[in-house]
Every structure is written in structure tokens, then in C-alpha cells.
Length: 298
Ligand SMILES: [Zn+2]
Image (cartoon, rainbow, N blue to C red):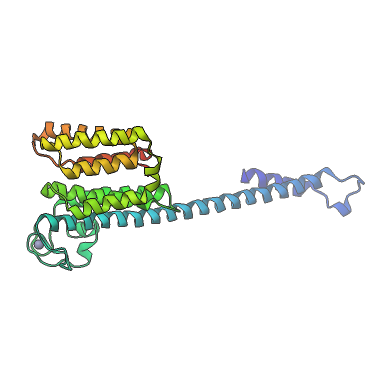
């Protein structure tokens, strides 16, 4: 296009006659052709300038979104790392008040760079820098998954990310981790976190009708029955009740169905008879959060 415009301008300029020297009274055709060519070239460069302006704006927006995602990923991975550390201390009866994290094998206090989620693991090559003991890879995997999930929460609403969803996710993660390690959860975290979530979602409570409350009561009675048969724990019942109130009957049924499917699959592969339930709820929650966010109101 640029070549054609230049050729047009060149042709028009070589055969054009300056207006003052033109013998015709009417405006000459060559003069108009020349002006049209100048206008075309001007429009061409204007169009190019607009294109580059839009392109630069797009690049800046992508960079900002990438930065938001990276920050959110780091927040999510840090939360997962913190939840894992607190859960491990709870499961192994280690006081939470010890200031520095340490290697689970040699008990050497970790440096600050070793504490950076994901990055610390990669820099150490998956082994403790002091005793070369292998660092459990699943902890880093959980940090990555939780970081990605957190990144998605922030990218969905960069202006006002749903911090309550983030809190609910962190609460579920901590409970799931302690449940997986010790088959029990700290009562203060369970009931305190649940009560706080209900208080923050007080409008969701107000929206529930009589049928919803009948369902919650039925669910509570059923799970208490399962508790007596030692199929569920009290923490499982409480977590299920909180999630059913927050998400509604239909969405909670999706969550429960997927959790049960995952448990059946796990049993089919590993034949483990005693399983913690909350980690499977967490897996379902993360699955819906990533692929069907409307189910968990992200
Ligand atoms: Zn070590």
C-alpha cells in the first residue's frame, strides 16, 4: 500500500502544474490528484500511528495483567506455604511460636531465600541445602496450584478481587492439610473460620428460603448419622454445612458429588480404607473455581 501511494504521489507531482502557472481557470485535475495523494499518505501514516498507539496500549495492559497475576500467584503460593507450615507443626506437635521455619530432617533454620514459595524449592534443586534431604514435591505442587487459583481470582476482577473467596480457599486448604496429616483439625480454626465466613456472607444467609433450611437440617442429620457409623468426622459435617449455606443447595450438590467421585477413584487405585474427606472437598472446590467459577461464586 505504501509503495502504491508513493507511486501515485510521484506520478501526480511530475505531471502536475503549479496552480498560479496553470492557464486553465477551473482547478486542474493534476493539482487535485496531487492533493489527494498527499492526503492519502497523511491518512496512511495517521492510521499507522493509531495502530502503534493501540498496540502500545495493548502491550501495557498485558504487562499490567501479568504483574497482577504474578503478585496474586505469589500471594496464593505464600498462603499455601504458610498453611502447610502451620498444619505440619500442628500435626507434629511443634509449637507455632518458633519464629523461623526449619528443615524437617536436619532442623536447620532456613534462610530467607529458601522460604520463598516455589522459587526456594527450585533454587535448592528439590533438596535441603544443608543435609541434601529430599523436600516433599507435593508441597510445592500445592503452592503452584493455589498460586494459579489465586491468580485466576485476581484476574477475574482485577479492580476488586474477591478476598472472601481467597479467605475461604485458605481456610479450606489449612483444614484439608491438617486433616490429611492427622485426621483431625484444630477446633479454633474450624469454628472460628466458619463463623467468620458466615458473618461475612450474612446476605447469603438472608437469601435462603424454607426449603434451603430444610435441606441443611436434613444434611446435618444425615452426616451426624454417618458420623456415628464413623464414616465422617464432625469437622467434615461442619465444613459441608458451611459450604452448603454459602453456595446453595444445587452448587453444593455438585461439589459433594465430585468429592465422592474422587474418593471412589482414590479408593479404586490405592485401596486406602480410612481417608480424610476435606482434602477431596478442597480438590473439588479448586476444580470448580478454575473451570466453573459461578458454582463457588468467585
Ligand atoms: Zn535439612
